[in-house]
Image 1: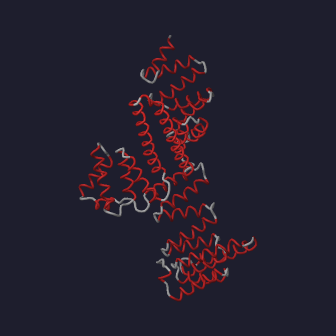
Image 2: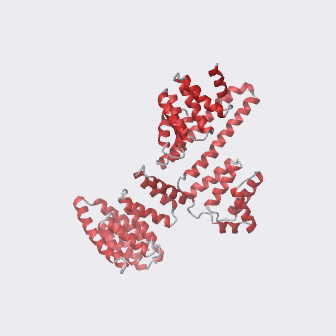
Amino acid sequence: MIEQKTLREITSDMRNNFQTAMNAVDKNNIDYAILLLKSLVLKEPGFMDAREQLRKVERIKTKSLGFMAKTMGGVKAGALASKGKANLSKDPKKAMKLAEDALAIMLSNIPALNLLAQVGLGQKANFIAVEALTLAAEFHPKNENVLNWLAEVYAELGMGAKTLQIRQQIAAMHPDDMNKQQAVRAAAALATIEKGSLDQDDFRKSLKDENQAIKTEQDDRIIRDVDDVKLLISEYEQAIAAGGASMETYRKLAEVYQRGNEHDKALENFNIVVEKMGTLDPHIDKAIEKSTVANFKKTIKQWEEYAVAEPDKKAESEENIALITSQSLDFQLERALARVNLYPNDTELRFGLAMVYWEMKNVDDALQQFQIAQRNPHRRLTALVFLGRCFHEKGQNDIAVEQFEQAVSGLVAMNKEKMDALYHLAITCEAMGDKEKAAATFKQIYQANVSFRDVAERMEQLYK
């Protein structure tokens, strides 16, 4: 097993050689610097300062190569890598030397980087494998074999954020590949629990006793009243106060605060989770949005109450309510766009963005997003209804009717969603002057639920 070492942990002779190599770098004597640093890395593969500096000067050399030099260098480096691969199992040290010799010629050589990664994994030096594959991904960002391998190594090491980044890169290359999107979702889940998700046994030890831990686990699934919320908050806060609390503990505390409508404290803890993750998880981001919007609504309610208490201030209240409502929608749009930009193939997020546009009365952008969102099997019928509403708003009623009829045909039970689709179909038919079809459609709703919206009133008018 190869251990990582710092400058302080190597011999004095190696430190002197390292300093000589750095002097060569300062004098722009690249080839000599590579020769010295490579010898240090081969002698002590875990010497991280030497590895870092070697890659820097090798990168400089590779970028300076002309077309012919790159062509010849690729051939030479590839030949060395082939020899190294033949020695991989019987003589790993020789394989590593051949890999380093190849990289000294051309750092971007894929066979050499792959060989170095294999040596690193074989010697349980994961940091070497990560280094090699990261370089390969840097120089060859479209090479899916490299990207998939790097993502697998990251995942095995529990590096969720890094795994997610690579999976997103792969998915962006295949916008319509659901398997790639599923891999992104799996990576997002890993990112959520990175840096040590809450281990049940460890968490139990942080509580007062085993019975209390079991009770907390049960209450975390079903929170019945305010006392349950207070109990859970107390338990998680104790775990955090004890020190060494995981990211999962902060997440659960934030969720309980959110359930208890203590949104400022929820946001505080969700932000800690984001900081620990180092990446944007759509589920956490939505939770942050939920509490932020709840605070906007709380402020709006206060202005509404103020308008009732101070009737002469009604105009001022309405102005502030309109401003806060606009700010809330702007915030929701910002977050929805950020999530979609990060996960462009996630049709659930597209539906969320479409709904924000709809609330903002931005019909054209909502229409575009609902068209993408209808690819989601769970959102298809709802998206169709909103597509119909968008077309209706644009005065394109014939197209709107087609969307509503598709949605209605897919909805079997006469539930609220189907009645909603029928309702909008009916008012669109009415707008087109097709009163007979409008009446027949309203009648379907009326027979199922006479209290649905203003259907009873409309039926009376139609019969008159």
